Image (tube, rainbow, N blue to C red; front, side, top):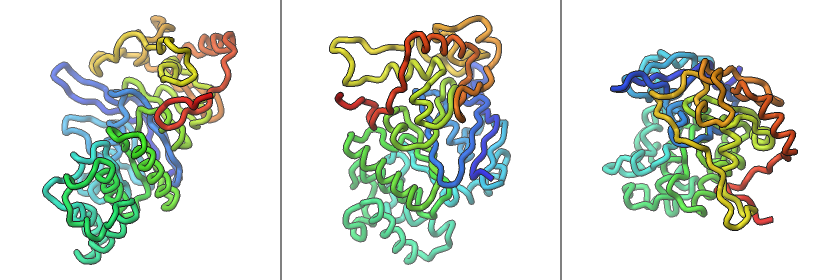
Amino acid sequence: MPLLEVRDLSVELQTHRGPAYAVRDASFSLEPGETLGLIGESGSGKSITAMALLGLLPENARVTGSIVFEGRELVGLRERDLCELRGDRIGMIFQEPMTALNPVHTVGDQVAEPLRLHRGLSASAARKEAVALLDRVGIPDAARRIDAYPHQFSGGQRQRVTIAMALACGPDLLIADEPTTALDVTIQRQILDLIRELVAERRMALILISHDLGVIAQNVQRMLVMYGGSVVESGPTTEVFAHRMHPYSLGLFGARPGLRRVKGQRLATIPGTVPELVDMPKGCPFAGRCRLTVPECNVALPAPVEVGPEHSARCIRLEVVRAEKAALGSAPTPPPPPGGREEQP
C-alpha cells in the first residue's frame, strides 16, 4: 500500500467573482522513501495541493476527491485528528522561514514544541532533543543559541531551524515548499543537500515544491508539471526531462536560460499571461496560450495519456507534438544543475 495516495483531488475557492478551481483532478501516489517534485510557475496550484494534504486550506475552500495517508482518508477528517498528524507523521518546511517562525518565542521552544505535544516529552527532555536537532541541521554552537530568537539568525540558519522543527518527530512524509526561496546559490545548495541527506538517513518520503527545474532535476525521482491547478504531465524525472510531451512543459523547459545559447539570442517565451483561476478555460488550462489550441481543447479537461514508461500527459494534440519532435529530430535533454542553468560545454 502506498504511503500517500491522492485521487481526483479538486480544491474550489469561493471568491467575489465566483468559484475558482485552484486544483483540478490531481492524482498521484507516493511510496515510503520515495521523492516527488511539483514544478510550475506561480499560481499553478503547487502550494494549494500541499496545503490540501495538511488540511490547512482557507475556510471557504471545498475539497473533493480522496487523500489517503497510511491507509487513512484525510478528506473530511476532523480538525483534531488532522492536528495529530501535522508535525508528527507529516512535517512541512515552509518557503518563508521568517513568517513560519514565531518572533516572540525562542527557536528552542519552537523546535521542542512538537516533541512535547506529540511525543509527550518533558520540558528538559524536549530541550535536550531540540539541541541535538539544531546541531544536526548545522546550527553552530546549538547548545548556546537554543535560547536565541528568529531575528538573531541569518536567512539560511532560519531555514535550518524550520527543517529541525519539521523533522522533530521523525515524520513519514516531509513536504518542502520552495525551501530555498530568497537564499543565495551557495546556501541553496547547502539546504538542498541537507534535506536530501536527512530524507535518505530517515527513509522519509519527500514532496519537493519548486519553480526551479534544476532543483527538481537533482533532487527527486518523480515529478508533476502543474499549470492552472492541473497536473499536465507526470512521470519519472529523467523520463520527463528527456521526453517531455505537453506543450506547456515544452514551453517551460524552452524558456530556461543556459550557457550554450548564442550571445544575443532571445529566450523563448510562452505567449499571453496566466489567466486568473476564475477565468481558467473549462477544458485544458493551457488552451489559448498554446499555439496548438483547437476548439476541442476548450470542451473538457483532457484525460492523462500514456506517453512513456510511467509517463503521462494531459493533451488531445499529442500526435501533433510527436510529429513535430520527430521532424526536428529532438534529442533527449540532460537535466540542468540546481539553479536551472546548463553547464559550460
